[in-house]
Amino acid sequence: MPRQKPGQKISDMMARLSGQVAPQRRMVHAGDVIYQAGERFGHLYILNSGFFKIVNLSADGREQVVSLKFRGDWLGFDGIADGHYVCDAVAMETGEVWGFRYDELLCACAVQPMLLAVLHEAMSREIAHDRDSLMSVCTLPADARVAEFLRHWVESLTERGMRTDEITLCMTRAEIGNYLGMTLESVSRALTRLARDKIIAFARKGRREVRIPDADALSAFVQRCIAPVPTSKPLLVH
Amino acid sequence: MPRQKPGQKISDMMARLSGQVAPQRRMVHAGDVIYQAGERFGHLYILNSGFFKIVNLSADGREQVVSLKFRGDWLGFDGIADGHYVCDAVAMETGEVWGFRYDELLCACAVQPMLLAVLHEAMSREIAHDRDSLMSVCTLPADARVAEFLRHWVESLTERGMRTDEITLCMTRAEIGNYLGMTLESVSRALTRLARDKIIAFARKGRREVRIPDADALSAFVQRCIAPVPTSKPLLVH
DNA sequence: CGTATATTTGATATACATCAAAACGCGTGG
DNA sequence: CCACGCGTTTTGATGTATATCAAATATACG
Image (tube, rainbow over all chains, first blue to last red; front, side, top):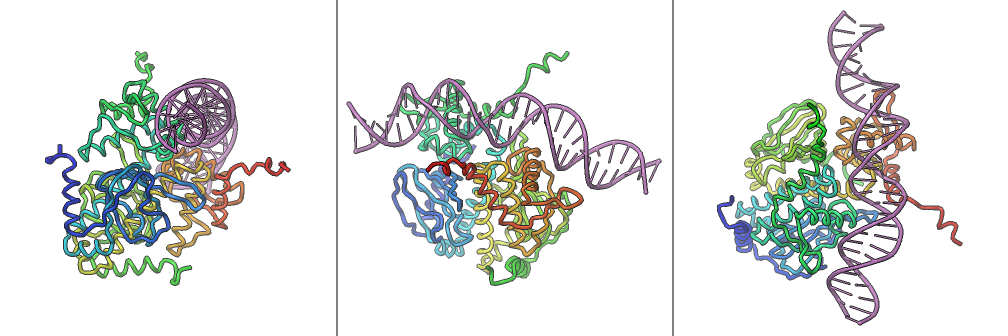
């Protein structure tokens, strides 16, 4: 139970930040790329609104959606180490991105240690989140991964004070599948099963709008998937 | 082609660092834990020698090896965000760990910006690496994942100026399988196939010692796995 | 409205997991 | 030093979740 209105923390952070270092504001639309793998690193970005995917690319042409970004999330940390971004950052819907020159940001940190704490917290959170993703992919069956994906989406929206009873997946089944390490068909089937079990419901028009009456039901579904056979057998044992 | 002897960069970094902030040195043995999920965050650590696994834990009891750490790697970034570590850091062999109080480190950074750059580079690299792991697990078949695992291990040793023609996997097949998202049997079979193809060879006693005459052969093997059927069919087409 | 793109759904194939047993290596204590 | 027991690894037989292939249907878009 947050003391403040949900999303307030992010708003505060962004207000403080833009007071400290003048951001370079930029509107983006679905498909726009704010940085690309290989491009010279120089800026970090924060999403003020909208929604991004981060796509990792391998030398041999594989691509992998490795992260999804919402309002208040930072983008571009991957570029610091080698001076070049190693992923593409692609907008999934209309939004606004704030860009900061990394060197300016560091100067500001010297004056305002609070800012450094914010930066480190964001990087730390990203590391922790990436590890959770790996764990999901490695330990959950396909249906549970999809449920977990929706649960996490709802959680992200909640933290930002946004509606969660009806969400819009601005990704194709193929993109979701790529992110979760499965095929688009498996995503489709998983969603169908979730709908059959009344854990989600599709809005009348378009299967990208999903109604989620009860987010806890998603967690329960995940648990059911991994503790799979509470077989009736034990009950038969006297 | 590095201008310096491989491993020199890491040695320099560690020398500079310990000159700046007195580390708390600690010997560890296989099985020792330097921090645990849930424990209050306060320190960051660097491995001076030895080898660690980082294990992520979920509320429902799943565990996932999410990262492997070698000499010069930092441990504990995951704890910054929420003030508590979210993983276990477990030693896999005898080694030495240097601990630094995070607040002291930040003070030192204020004086010595070089240090901050080192810290950020390490966090950035960790983010990039975690994403590569996710990509491997999501896009490579089991055999290729094992080959890629060995290739990365060799690469890590090379960067540190250590021998790579004969490496000792200080992990069980089960641990490797957990890290790579497959069963221990699949790991065993993959290694057997790599040995059959003469890409690796087991040392006489004990199947934990692996000889890798040519690291590039591992990369080639991975590529062969993902471009799987260069079917002879095309050749038959006039 | 018609064409292209997403999505669903079904039939089938397959990579990998699971289950089971044997072989191996390793430490312990006689 | 050898015998024993335990944990690890290998290997084989079988099962299954998910991928693949293939239509049919729905939706968006010009």
